[in-house]
Length: 142
Image (cartoon, rainbow, N blue to C red; front, side, top):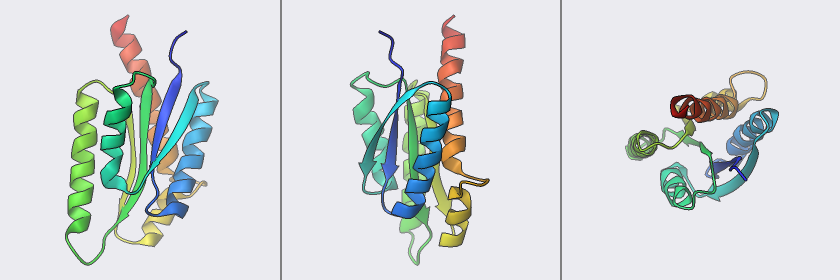
């Protein structure tokens, strides 16, 4: 039986934002006929490690990274944004199909807009990116 499951890794640091991203991600994955599993991690920094661990199992055909980082008063924001993005890109370059849905926003209003179900929802966009990369790999392998 061919693997048809996409793993959604969701950071729960901002649970209302993450849940909205997750709901749209699930909708897209189901619309395209794939199964999904959701695993939660504490924050965006942990998302790449979770994907790396999961990839070693070969249970999943693709991954969607969801979460939100909002700028605060210290440089912590920059480290979390840069390092999580860098690690996810590294995993992508190693051959994993990953949709990047970690919001990096200046404030909660920006995050709410990007997580809204009526427009800019990045959960939807990141799932579409993951699905396209899955298809792209199939095209290359033909």
